[in-house]
Amino acid sequence: MNSDGVTIRDIAEAAGVSIGTVSRALKNQRGLSDETRRQVREVARNLGYDPGRLRSAKARRLLFMVHRHHSSFSLNPFFSQVMHGVEEACREFGVVPTVLSAGPADPVRQLLRLHEPDALMAAGYFEAEVVDLLRAMDLPLALVDFWMPGCRAVNPDNAQGGYLATQHLLAQGYRRIAYLAGSLAHFSIRERERGYRRALFEAGVLADPDLEVVAPPGLDTSAGAEAAMRELLKLRPRPDAVFAYNDMAALAAIRVCQAAGLRVPQDIAFVGFDDIAAAGYGTMGLTTMRVDKEALGRTGVEMVMRGDDMPQDIVQPVELVVRDSSCSPR
Image (cartoon, rainbow, N blue to C red; front, top):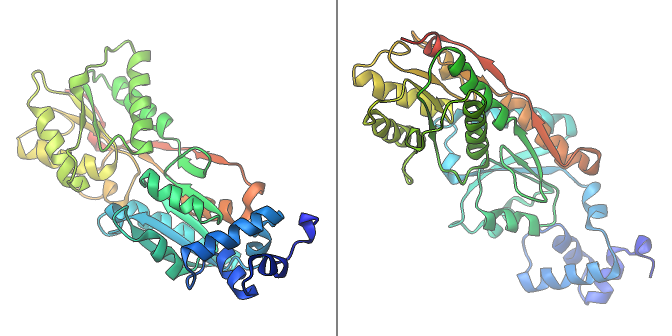
């Protein structure tokens, strides 16, 4: 049979099920056993049917996923601004967005079916097994602020941002520049570290492994950054500047330094990443790399809705925003 002429009726007859069962199986909707779903999809593949034909006319629900670790938008404002961009783009495409926070310990497959999405977006870090499950849904999928082989993804230019942040501190005269990182399982954190190291190398500054610290696992961003900063302050000589993997970490580290009697930037300078609203608050602004977070969300929606008309990988530029926290060395 010519695959172009295969219909869901043909699949239903070959699989010995109803047309409604075929429709639900191809769209990963709830109400079917995994065995029935696998059987229908296998028959469809054998007949050469493209599930995209069914989805393309009915892409009306988009599921925006964040890891349970990032699910408090009040504590992690980065993803709340990404979500604003998602909402704007969904209105333009006539799509209804819903939000799901989940981690590997959650029944992700069942949660996905409750939402009955036609397209998926995953923002920030997810474990490989969760991404594999999303890919197995056979729905349009885009990763935002994350990357895995074979997936559509949109990211800020993390490596260039790390390079520019470190280069800025070097240009101000700082030499013992620390990198305060979160878990290196995160793609963005690894890329920012790569830019940090490249800037040091090009400046002829020997990288000191003691100046690269990772926040202890199991803590939230602020608590982890505070613990990592306390370790940096034990060094002799201590760092004269810190590039933190994001603004929340930078602000937490600054509080530790100020509590220890250090002046910022006279005794120790700071640069963050993301340019969240809090970076510009208070008596001292935080130098940071500005990320267009809403553009990340909008682009992610465009990637899942337009499919092959969009590039597989999109990297968006970042901008250095200089404020008081890095103005001049001692």
